[in-house]
Length: 222
Image (cartoon, rainbow, N blue to C red; front, top):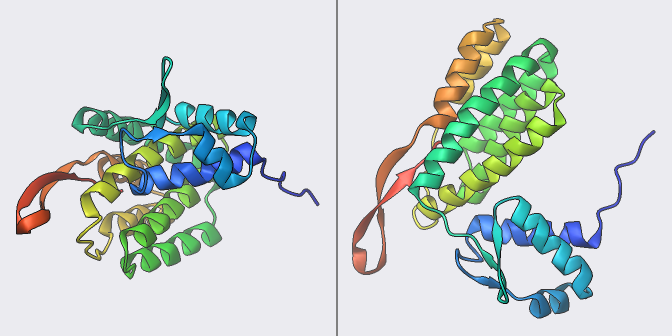
């Protein structure tokens, strides 16, 4: 029986920092201070630098000459780019995954969707949403494609947390159920088209800010 490789120190640092960046705990534009991170994790500067480079690869941080690393900003142009890339790549992955789809996978995906419907926080919903997409796409058996999709989903999550941080509203994900229904019936084209539309859609909504004012933010289905 094969055991999963033990997580390296640099990988753990990158994973924790990525989660903080995606959730908005570390805001866009913030500097990533090597000394502070090294002290927090009890690490030397070598794994911290490796972690920063991994964040850069994921598009979550960028290197500035003589100033170190900082968290990347994001705007609506990036949101559109991410949505279009996810639309194309996730439908491609699903088309290759469909012949390998099992009843057990579809049943687990249904359970995950129900869990997402009852999520009380945006963080819980995002975790369930990402789990759903991973379940139905992993059978494509294309690891490079899946890694790219993972990075794009992380970018989408940043927009999701930014839009819903203050006033999360539970929702029923009809698209997820439509995708599963099509897959059960062997309607691969319909499942792929529904998924492409689902992840490619961008909407607008009003969200409350300080002094009860409203500002317009962009909404994505995840």
